[in-house]
Amino acid sequence: NVRLPESYFGAGTLAAVKTQSWRIGCISRAAVPEEIAEFTAFYLAAMTRNGAIAMDVVYTGTDSEAEVQKAARTLADLGCDVIATTIDSDAAESVCEELGLWYIGRNGAEESMSSASLQDPSADEAAFSTDGYDAEEGSGYEYGTHESYDADTEAGYSGTAYAGHPRRLVTVDADWSAYMIMAAGCVTGGLPIPADWSGGLAESAVSLGSFNPDAVSGEAAGLTAESLEKVRTRERMIFAIDGFSVAGERLPSYIGPDGVDFVDHGYFHDQDPDFGGSVSVFDIIVDGITVHDLSALTAAQAAPAEEEGGTSDGTDIGTEEVGIPESSAA
Image (spheres, rainbow, N blue to C red):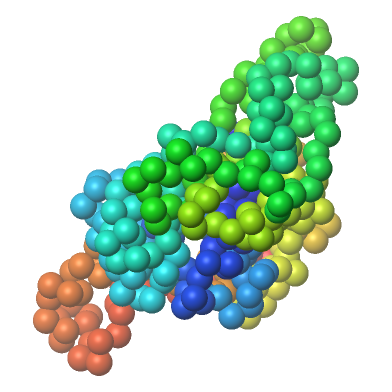
């Protein structure tokens, strides 16, 4: 599996720079760990830069164009001015263009650039060689040299990629060729291919696409690249427990179904083969994030306020305040 939360963390840094309402949003399909981990990483990065930022998430239950666009309008109504998605659909982008909101896409078609190539575009060419894989150490693909982002250059920009996409800031991307590079390195090195593998920025398995030069300043690009680099080098652990709270409390532990405590050495080990495997188990809604169910919101709008649990004062019955699942917290 790939660790897309690492890329979403970088996107969250950019969202914090661009928001003016201090409210950002995300469209997700369902309350599953993979998507929760992704939008939580997005929020935690934004909150790191501005502790007053809040986030709304709308669950669509589907990736249909109409529902995704409805979710985008819902987020706009809630005051969100930067919208991301954990759904493989760009249907929300047209709504953002119409309403003048900023949009962060997912798995887009524009040229993907690793954090290394933000400094040196030729770095991506090297990524398709097994030379970077240390078969003896089994350490996975390494970028080689990486210098900090130089805001005076335009290495991280691609103007042609954003023709016709004026409100798109950047795109979160995954590259499964990183797994093939790792597997090829194992074969050529005479080592077994790992049964469980997790790849992120350090393995070139995830990235942010090139920045929109008409929407992202050199300073904003530099801050985003710096954020990505801290995650890549593990200077910043995305789910460090001192970086979020649940119902006003720090997360002391999280016991998985196999009795594994995913909280160790100060952070939540999500997608870690040494702590339960590469599949995400992060199903916690942290403080500062409010989730909404689109179908419940739609039903509430269609029915009289007094019926089906509605209220005459306009209370949003499609909103959940979700804490630590009883079966998981200790």
